[in-house]
Length: 215
Image (cartoon, rainbow, N blue to C red; front, top):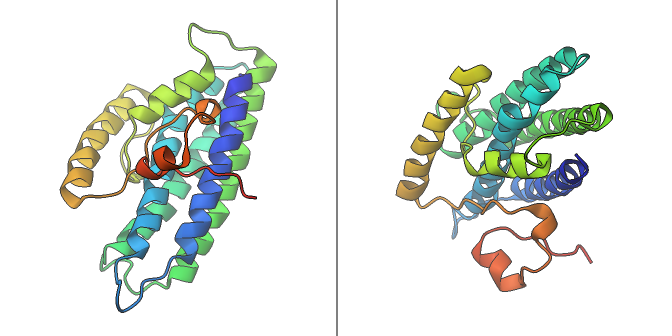
């Protein structure tokens, strides 16, 4: 549980940084697609992490004696967050459902929902820590393995819970992998956050996964 809390702090920091870069990315006449990289890497990392929390961590909390309501609150918030991420994807790729909506309004929704979800994720970790949940796998590792198998695009309208939700995310992951390759989309590598210190600047650049000190 301690590594889960540590990893969540690092993940939230990284996602917040990616969100800041994505929200400020602007195309220009000479490079009309330059903003795609910042937005796509945020979308991929955010979608993957959100799906992994739904798949690997929320069910553990739901089965705690007093965890059902908290898990339900998180699942509702995570779906709302996914809907906001889906608006980003739709706006970026010119969907008729979002093309007329201003970017400022879209990013405002994403930032609001991101903050709500991060707070609930911390509460999930605290609930598991208080309950002293033990298992064959460290929860930080469990989350990491779930991220490896999670979709890289938001899918707010597929089933989310139980076996059906798990299978739906597996199908979505395969579909996303195909389109990520076909479109040459930049998808950051999944990295265990407490194992990152050994990575040099070149490795971070090649993995599209920067985590350099802010100073």
